[in-house]
Length: 88
Image (tube, one colour):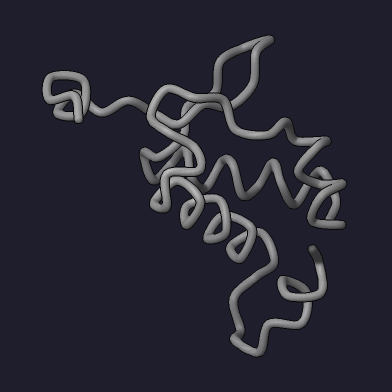
């Protein structure tokens, strides 16, 4: 929820903290490669942040190569070529 995100003592921006939270969930296997992550609205409700904050976080993760946007569908964990060739 927002309590942990909003009152973090480091100086990073809120959307960066949201992006870090999503990236951590991917690293922990909560969201696997190719899977859809929560919608912007759902995640904004869950974390008690604005939809703009979630969009900025998802765009940051997209720029970093972790997520991909699919028009009219949502955001998905990006499948990397190496991961596609070497299933676990």
